Image (tube, rainbow, N blue to C red; front, side, top):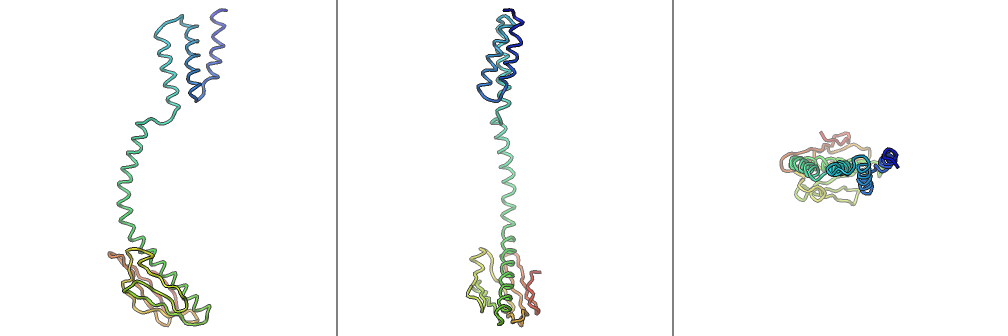
Length: 195
C-alpha cells in the first residue's frame, strides 16, 4: 500500500467527522494524527500544533466563554443600576394615573346604573377615610387600599346622576400622591373626564 492511496481515504473520513460534538473533536484529532503519520513520517512538533488547531476549532463552536458571560452580566448590571431608580421615581405618577382612571370608570358605572335602573344615583366620597360608594350599588371602594400612597384630597360635591344620565350636581374629585394631584371631573351633562 503506497502513501498516496491513504490520503484520499483519510481526508474524506476527516471531512465526514467534522461535526459539533466532543466525539467528533476526538475523531478529528485522531484522523489528523493518522493523516500526519502518513504525510510527515513521524515529525514530533506537527501533531501538537494540529491538536491545538482541532481544540481551538471545537472551542469556537462550543458557545460563550466565561469572559464574555461576565462582560455581558456586567453591562446588564450597570444598565439595571441606572434604570431601576428611574422606574421607582416614575411609579407614584403611574399609580396616580391608574387611580384617577379607576375613579372615572366607577363614576361612569354609577351613571350607567342610574340610567338602567331609572333612578338617581349618588356617589359619596369620604376624604378622611379615602372610601367612596354608590347609592344604587352595594360596593364601596377604598382608594388607599387599591392604590397605596394615593389619597382623596378634595371633593367639591358628591356627584348625583339622574335617570337620564345627567349630573344634577357636577363635581371635581382630586386625588393626590403627596407631590402631584390629578382631578376627575363630572360635568352637568354627566360626562366624566380626566383633564
